[in-house]
Image (cartoon, rainbow, N blue to C red; front, side):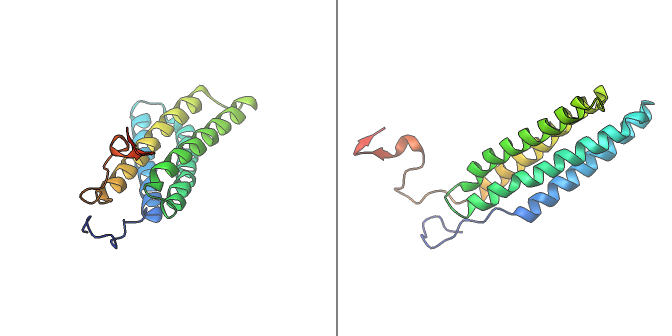
Length: 157
């Protein structure tokens, strides 16, 4: 891909690949967590782990949709969409956690696993976004590379 060629298209955000990576990562984390709990003699926490990772992975996949949509609409739209997706994930995971707490169904372990699963899925999604943004070609020679290099109303910032 030649960055100096204006007809070169930037790669699109890989929605299905990213969603698959999140689901696989959540499954692997689930197996590792269940194995660790079994070794520690705390297998009764297994359902909490399963539900927390499934919910966080579901909201993680849902949170990828804004990145995929905005990537087609504007330059670096995946980064803006990722921020919107983070808001969707945070609200969704918090809403589920508070709904379970309100019904007195939550074990303290569920809340702990929900927070851990949220952070693990966030780590995977951040890695996906970093990988995608690194694939976008750099600006052509002479084009401003950063916001600090751009001119606003004839004045350099």
